[in-house]
Image (cartoon, rainbow, N blue to C red; front, side, top):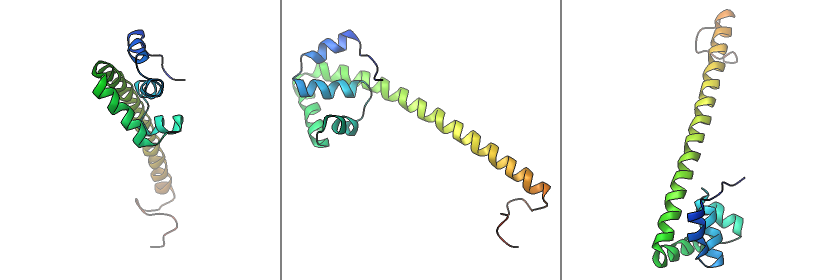
Length: 117
């Protein structure tokens, strides 16, 4: 589910034309330009042009969208880093189990079981 935008930002976005408004909403909710293009059925260049028009004609709206988008993307980035740290932790744990098992079976450290010495 997409996050709800603050009222002030929603009021600013309401001033835009329909297509620009839809793209600006998606970007403000933390979406990427590519995601906005795919979800709206637009070309990536069209999305960039819409936001360029917003930046040139409504700099106050553009600044608010970019500010809110930055916050959302930072949250996504933090979540991705947490997922990566968890995967790393699981990988290190599996490697330590493998090394322990190899040591019990008498295989030297670092040698794979399918490679002959």
